[in-house]
Image (cartoon, rainbow, N blue to C red; front, side, top):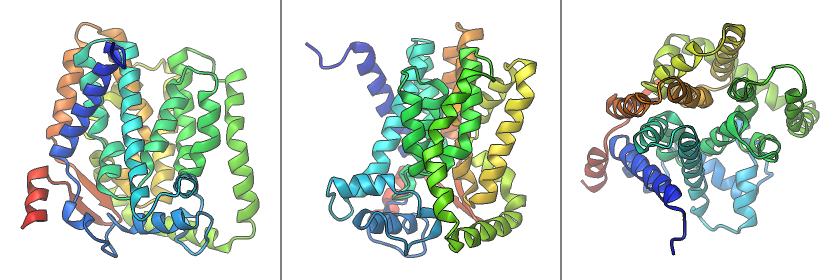
Length: 349
């Protein structure tokens, strides 16, 4: 008697295969991960994250991390020692990738379709960043946005709304776009009862606004980020491209299949979401993963309109994304991502 149904075992194999290929072609800097390297973006957030895991509510850390307290609270509650909390982001990327594969199977139960879509997801910055940068809990946020867009259970969106903002405020930035994708996916009106789901964001918003009234460092941080974002404008197109690459084809196809009555609003929501991300964060390729719900929307539209061709097309798109070079863009630094053999050579030399 098997522990899982055959269909779910197949999904797990597809997820493992997709993540293995992603790491093989876009490997982390293993030689930098051996010991703490101050000043490297592979370690700086990890160092702060580990400090938070020891004292989750401490305030003497970088402003960007002050409100991202849920993962440190979990690590602290579980008494995870030393650097063990650094596995939490990897659990997040495993959960997000598995959920994406499950969503793909719901739309078209074809191995090529599921594998192609999962590989496409696994080769975007939604996965490449948590794999390559220690202590980055982004994947939990992208999982939450996918739940908002495609979750079926009544409790799923409320739970995401209550928890995910405490992982990263990017969840609130990306919520309107994911919410619009959900209305289109369910063929529901924009106005009316669905708007009530946004109320689950109020606890986080109210608490943060109340405390930020007495926190001058928050205003200084926002002002600094806005100033920095102006210097990054020439790099924005390259940063956005590197985050998704071939997955932009899925985004474009999703928008192409939106009805005209909703296309303008969704397009503006996408541009606004990406624009706010640029204004408040300097990691351009990382932040564009906030468009992940639209990537899957494009895959689903393909399955709905062309079910016979969709498996082959999506598999080709996933392989193309595996072969297109990728890089992390942080501030004005462009850091190419190397294949695993190169990183192993640098580690062992």
